[in-house]
Image (tube, rainbow, N blue to C red; front, side, top):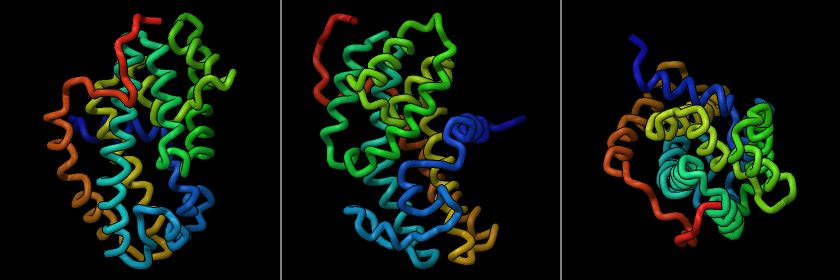
Length: 222
């Protein structure tokens, strides 16, 4: 039987491919890995060997994935399920004022808008079409994390499974993007992935309730 972990990984892999906004700074997008280029990123340090890659990924999990990206995905998923377009647009705009998102703005918007465009054929899905129009009219940014959360709701993929898949795919992508330049073996890559991701399911379990969005207020549904 295929495990839930593998299903989650496959879901995110289909959506994200091997790409993430940080990948452009890592050089993954062109397969020309230059991990030292992240020295300017305020919470991450340059990578030059296996241990520094491990530290980079631990900091990414602690300072970007869990508090920023997972939270954004959760909020977008909640608003999409509740048909709260106005609240989603407000949250989208609020994220644009945060320093973390500004540093990833261009690639995050590019990925988000590309994936949102793939939802365009869903003509009968009013929420998707209205969010798409908001992004096209520049009333919203279309961050990749928000579009991912909306996609989970649209396709009825369980939230925890989607969050886990997102984390797995990105962690795996970073490791294998660095593997050649750092001369990591397949065994080392797998061990590092397993070490970093082993605790993620437990982190998700106590947070099943709806999160509080940035600037979230009580609004009537749009």
